[in-house]
Image 1 (cartoon, rainbow over the protein chains, first blue to last red):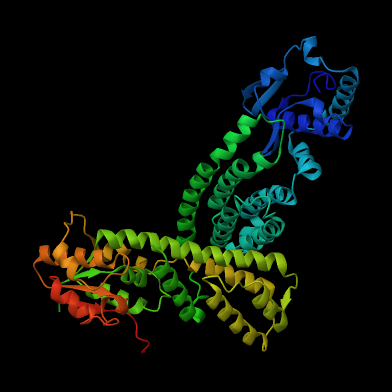
Image 2: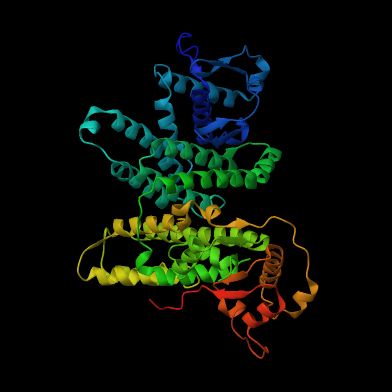
Length: 284
Length: 232
């Protein structure tokens, strides 16, 4: 990429991660998956490189836009692989550099990574769901919405179709560890949308996806991660789930405080009360 | 009428859950009393049961809503689709089975006169999930404003405990704690309950009613039943 753009292209970590993954997928298609040995895991914003960057010939440096990736001078030993694989690596590197050397920002490469390689439909739907915040923020600040007196009703009507697609696409047997928390997040998020509390909804979504990445994504969708790291991630699951449960409690209180009263349970209160007393008698 | 009251766990649940059958009886009682104590055992039991009830029911409803979203494609629900949901998506083992079944029975009745949208069912279930978490004492400043938590140590009273007929779960401990509060307070004290079977009535071949037994062997002056008896 550096060469293809005559040194003009600045590459940030997000783009680097995606390029590495695209290269891996290309090489996998050509039958070199077992020889590449580049540890990667799916995390919050897609597949990412896992390990010390120096070991793979790059350096990470923070600047005002993010984490910038620059290449180190590489020794010949880095390319101590078979000629056939070396040719395949050069070929895919040239292809990807040609494709992305003129793109500015990371939106395109990120969208491409979800479009082509999201590990499940649910992950692809969640990526789409993230755009809802930009849509709602733009809507909130526009003169048109001011003139139309947009109410929180509009928020839930924008959010609900996304949430429904997430519910329908959730692979329950695959992501079973986080399924209960997903349902609870969904429930609170819909109420926050009804309240028009965009900030709380966005913050909770970020916390949810961080938990989800730790509890499900990095464990199910990874390549060549050392087994001891995988074992650590599995052991860490209860801690991340517990922390998110506490977060959910806080946001549920926020959702309840801003909520307009409803009376769905009133018409069925007798049988509801029986359920309450039945659980009370069974527990504790 | 006794000045001091000690509450059992059912009284607290009744106070905070509006849709509970005993809600009116419990909240009226708490609002009408000068001093209502919550014993350490009741506090612990209440916290555990309150969380358990709400999280169990909210979770079952949300699970059901997700099943409806995933399994029902029709945008309008005919009576036969509603029956299909009742048969295939409501598990009789669920704690929420009876009230969700009641909800669909009502909906089926409504479907004879108007169109039922799938979205309406999704929205109704969303609302139920949040209603489950409502705390009805909030309008009075929360439970903390209505009760006092007994924090001082409570000794054992083996002689009293030996004579008590009540034996279910933590109920004997609650009686002992109430006895201690009555002893310490030195003013007329009663125990309020929503569970007449454990605290009031005569059970099996026991020689006296539970109420008579508690009043006889402890320093409590009365045991009051605040369960709703079905009258309006």
